[in-house]
Length: 120
Length: 507
Image (tube, rainbow over all chains, first blue to last red):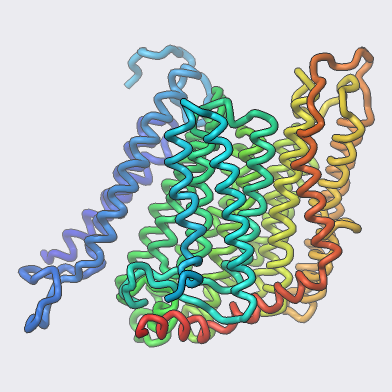
């Protein structure tokens, strides 16, 4: 099994799970889905410089074969941004849960509502 | 490089300095913070006008950040399009900021001014950058600031709409990154000028992937511009937020359209092989649907803010009708309409704000209410704003729509474009006539005037200023048209852009 196949199927599973969860009705699941989706995107960005093993990451004199350092810089930016976004969305959904007493994305109240009530 | 060359980065640097400063002084000396923020807006307008003047010589200027040559470092690019958008953003920001200060909306939370400045930082950066990943970063900056602004003042309804808005945009950002990843993986660059040249040189095996990347990128821009079927977040968000903030957001959907106008002729132009004009077949039907749904929404809306949100949706649709022909002449018409639609959309929200402040418990619901203070003045403003929004004479919407009709007549689907523009205008007129007569002419039976709504007339200044600007745009339509045509000519000469960006580097 090649490295490419492994990475690609990993990204695919993460994306599928992320999309499924992001389409659910409760904010907790949506947040989890967004996190999985951002993991998938970060892995994808990481892999766009092609998967190479045992190569220096920066250009040096006399080296003809090296790993592309730019995707690593890109993925670092993307990780920072998605991390901040995830924190924001967690706080937001918490606030909206506490204010309206329901963690439904569309704001429809639960049949048996109430903060603190555990509904698996 | 002279000092004048460094002026290009000023629209990004000014808000970046002002925002933390206002954040620091706001709690101790509120007035200093407000003055700083206003001064920042004025400075940005001055700089934008200066850059607009500089761009008049038709040259395209690249500003390599940190002195790194173009395909390797990030460049800012000043041309007619970016200069024009900077002026538009600065004018809108100044008027909206004035209104926020006059109506004391900025006092409902501590962070209105810093967030406002960060929003401008993101907008200005997005207009100036010549690098796709940098465009993503500036999009994120303006989105993060917009989340804060959107929730300014809070309330349960606003929080609910806010969650949806944030989630939608995070998914959009993920798609943006995937598109960028594909483009980088295929071409090894993210510089827009360089991308345009490398896509032309791609082999046959990569054509399918590059088409996919182009369509994904355009889907993201369509999400930002709220094009049907990706529009569902807009009416709810804009109707739930403070009207002043929504007035500033009038330019946010136009950022999506700007990105399309910037990216498609430059990267996916004639030379791009299988990816040439890749969004063209999708954009026209989407634009028709957007215009129709927008103006039908105007007809069906139950509150003024909701109506203004749908009017913005409709104006985006009309704008994209002109954009989707992808010819130089129609793009010129689209640019003229873009300026008009941004100011008209913002004016609608400001008028809604002024009205709902005077109607007490009736708010902005489109139901008959007893007489309220300043009914004539707000009624007149509403009339003028709606005339602008649907495009009736004498305001510039009429000129802009005429320009779109005139330039699209040579295009293939001209009949569809004409039918949509004229039909949606009629629906819009009916919709606004219905709400206007209900709001300002019909009086509820209990004829006691609404008390306690005796508000200062200074609140009327900002919407009146926007409407005066629209009148000016009508009077100066000849000049504005010439500007739009010169801008379109620059957009449709991607070789000049590439030459300017890629040779500036070797200096």
